[in-house]
Length: 67
Image (cartoon, rainbow, N blue to C red; front, side, top):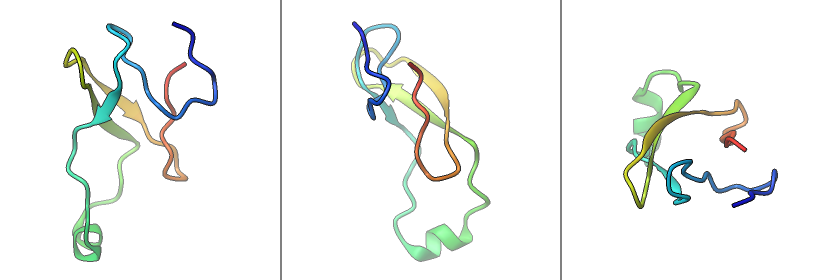
């Protein structure tokens, strides 16, 4: 399955499913202010097969998905 370079959806290398972040989101300004500095990596998991990996997060807040 070919994936365009401009795709915003991360694809699982095992089954072709969608990779979804598994960490809890910070929803309030208090949660954001009390958290540590953002990390350059985040944990993602496939919605179909359960494959897990770490993904690099860009400085602008966008994730660099593997091609």
